[in-house]
Length: 348
Image 1: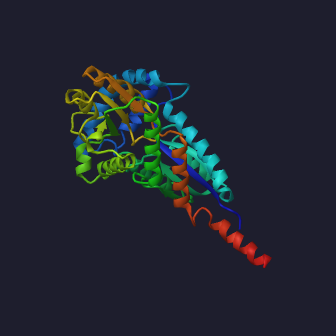
Image 2: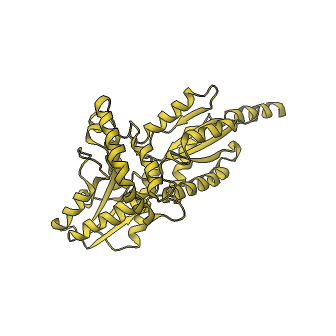
Image 3: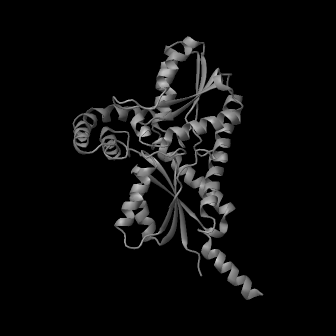
C-alpha cells in the first residue's frame, strides 16, 4: 500500500494584492462582507451592507492603501512571512518526519492565495489528507470559524474530497508559551529596561463575547501563562485589546486608551507584544509600532518598544512541527505504518 499524498495548510487572515486603493477595496469588500466578521441579519444586515458599500468602501481604501504602502516590501509582510513559515516548516518536517513526505502550503481566508482555490488545487493533485493549521493562537468565531465555513462549502460542492482536519487553537500550548517567553526575553536582553509589558490582542465586539465567543478567555489565559513563564508580578504586565472598529463597545481595556493613561500613573517605559498575531502585519507594524507609540509618547511616555511577532522564528517553527505531529499521529502515517508492518512480516 502506497503512502497517501498528505499536506499541511498554514492559513492566515489575508492581505490585499497591492498597496493600492483598488486592491484594498477588493480585499476589504471580501473581508467585511463575511457574516462571521460583521454579524447581523435582516434589516441590520441590509444597513451594514449599505454602509459598507456606500461609505466604507468609498472612503477607507485610499487611507488604508497608504498605510499598507508604508510597510510594503515587494509584497505584504503577512504574505511574505507566511511564505517563510511554509518554507521553514517544510524543511523541519522533512528532517523530523521524512517517512510521511508531507508537503506544506499557504492559504488565506481572504485574498490570495485563497483557501478555497488551494483546497481545489490540492484535491485535483490527489492529496488525500490535509491538516489545516489556522495561524490564530486564540480561537474566535471571527477568525478561525470562517476557515471551517470555507472548508464546509468546498466539501458541499465537491463529490470526492480529501480527509481534512483543522486545528482549533493553540492558545495555551506549552511550546507557544515558551516561544513567546523566549522572544520577550531575547528582546529585553538587548534593550533598556521597561516598567511594564503590555500584551495587546486584536479585539472583537463585546456582544460577540457575550454570545459565547471564547476568544477573550483564550487571550487572558495566554497572558497569564506568559506572565508566569516570565516571572512577572501583577503590576508588571497588562492585557489590552486593539483595532476596534465602529461605534459598538469592543473588548476592553483598549490598547490606545491604556497607553494614553499610563504616563500619568508613572509608567513611562513600556514594551508591547501582540500574542494573537502569528505574523507581523498592518495591525502590528503600523497600528502598534507607529500609531500607538505616538499615543504613548504624546501622553508623556519616554520609552516604547514593540516586540515583533514570532513570524518564522525557530520557536514558532518548533510549535508548528509539534502541532503537526500531535494532530497527525495515526492519521498521516496510517498507510506507511501498514506497509512497514507488512514488510516486517514478510521479512520474518
